[in-house]
Length: 606
Image (cartoon, rainbow, N blue to C red):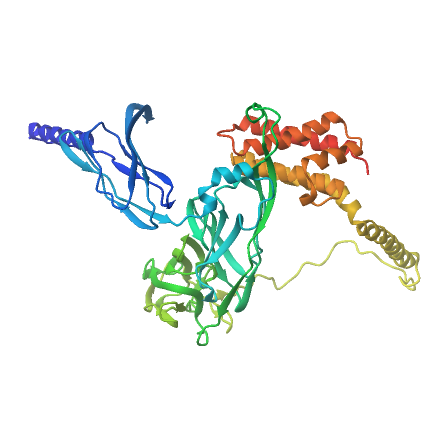
């Protein structure tokens, strides 16, 4: 028997090893959208060396080059086990002149005598415009500013009409002409969604080509928000505003043929773009809300269970209510459960287990009530009901559970004394007499006061009148002084500049601990520019490196401090897009920023 088991285990191990040898990862990758007439790349990759590579029949597309074969290898270490991996890639350069949707069929390759197929890829070819075809020429000739047609923000709702608490998805995209070189977002102003409950959805910063009004743009997915309107009527969403850093080529007359090689002909400019405001129509429900309306708009189910139905007095019973499905679970009202007066009921324990999806909140919300019987007998918990608004039928639907019967047997500690129950009490409690019929005579010393001595007209009486009056006058004088100081907005902003900068740096320090590089450098930049704006009483939009340096020089700031300030700005702008930056460099920059702001605070005297 043992020998048979050994053979079986050996056979299973051999089959598993053989299947691992045969397992291959053959996949095709290509852009989802391309511009008509432009070249694009299709790459087939496989983790084993093969032979007889065959490309499927491609219609309406030109193969300009390929296959270009390359390989790469490396080592991976998993749980202390080091393995060698090799990857082979077959690259093709294609072009399509006719707009439309095309599917490239799977390719095949021979691996260990067997044919293996890749996945197919679908590519959307969009119509281009002259600006996209002449990208390099336009970039070289650019001398002016960036227009609103070259770059803009668009917020698109998946629906403009909805019911209260119905989920709406707001998709924010940045549209950029191909010839515009956006380096990053330096500042952003987001709308205040105070009339909505909003949740951010996880998105990837996908980029693809889109043709809008005959012009080609690169669309960048910035964010997606799941919002639930909390009011009815016309609800407005304010615009989203971004400040972008754009690298722009400067056309100038060359003094030498070597100027373009040894001199920088680029500049970085700031561009603020703003989306259009949105207006959403939030409808009222077609009928009156039921008394047991839970607040959920969507589709849910309810399950009610009891931990046990045969208990003894003073034993705990848990009534569990599970609400599962799709809807705004966070605004759900606590279900009304009627407990017999002979039970003690405690506040429910609420557990949330749901995820934010494009359909809304999907998951389960659980209520657990602990009830304790105090007397023996047979009791019944009436059915529990809740109502929700079904978006499919546009009507209210009611969910109802079955009644729960609980048999309570007499326990060792059952209460036998009389009880007092009020109409408003949820349970009965024993009333015990804890006093005594004879009290102790008070033996402490009492303060005696002569007859004819009154508090009214005494020294203490006049002091109690005069002292509050003096304190009130002092308070009025201090308040007037503070109001006068606060009326000087410039002076107040200058006085609080250091405090505001320190608060922003505290946020940067928390981002440093989380190793969120881009957010850290953005927060440091905001702290520096915000401090300079408050200190010099200039809007941030009017500040630049040049005029900030000039203004600091006017206030006799030391040249070393000005140079350090500019160095930190350059480091932040570069480090956000650097391949990798360690915590050590970020921590050093954080300390240098604090020192520089401290020096500026002591040197700028207004």
